[in-house]
Image (cartoon, rainbow, N blue to C red):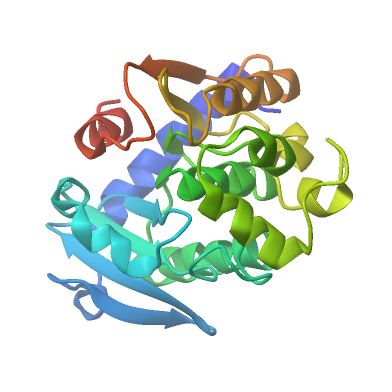
Length: 263
């Protein structure tokens, strides 16, 4: 866990470093439209605007893949940014995807490559639904990667979601991957792929916005509430904010952009 003083110094240093990196951003790593890249076998999309001084990491939702980012012009148009969207297994109906350690490792691999090639440090994370689950897993499994995060209607615990969700497709995908419904609330198969298993490692490195829908029947808001509780238990002084929206299972891209860049 970081002290407030250490975190302030670290963020100031990274901001200065990213400003310097923006001035010499390599033209060979620029792309004005989404281009497909590869990080040691993990595909991702890259898009750059202006002189990038930050990395925007977009994590796709449960039944999507890396191409989903193309549907959000609000993300595409973030000024002075290097936008990346890894695939991390694609749809969550395979064992390689659904919350696996490998899926998170693949995200981290892309971030590592982009940091190396761009010279940039700060990672601004955005993900919704299944992408929100992937975001929480990243914060728990790689707690030093993210600078700031906007997470929407996230999944915290797969076993409890199985019992509560109104979306039968989510249940079907879980059973396809894990073989059967959870045997109990702590079923090890479900727990190992859930943020509930790793958020005790969150260290407060990132400023986090967790957005829930008061009328969300697909991923009830208690998922976001429990994620915040777990993160603050792990890092009591962390800046983790819970925002409730009068909505169902939705992602408000413009509001996410505001949370990411209006520091």
